Length: 152
Image (cartoon, rainbow, N blue to C red; front, side):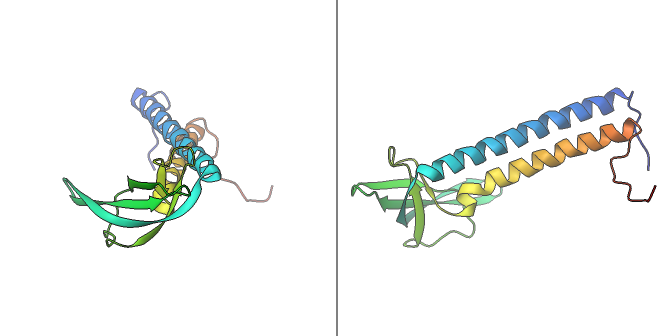
């Protein structure tokens, strides 16, 4: 396997860029997870109904955004738009909803995809990028990034 010299400026720049992007992804993922956890701790649950679908055409085909309507504990009717889904849900489908008691318009469909998809993608992706840079730096420094299980 070819190795890149630690004095190679392109290699250093690439490691710096991957480290920066990895750190950013990791921090964004952790921030989103903290925000979602905090939201879930104070949120009130309800059941909503998909009353409409907003269709948006990106270059890759149509995106379907469910429009959800639910009633708060105070009887107020709220509408909000969920994340894009595929396949599109049917109108009239009942969905679990979480909303902020102080701001009922701050609502989410209570599913893994709507609440935890982005934190669960960004955090490990950032971590993998950081571990990759750590591995590269260890190899260049002459260390071993792999556990040596041979008896000494």
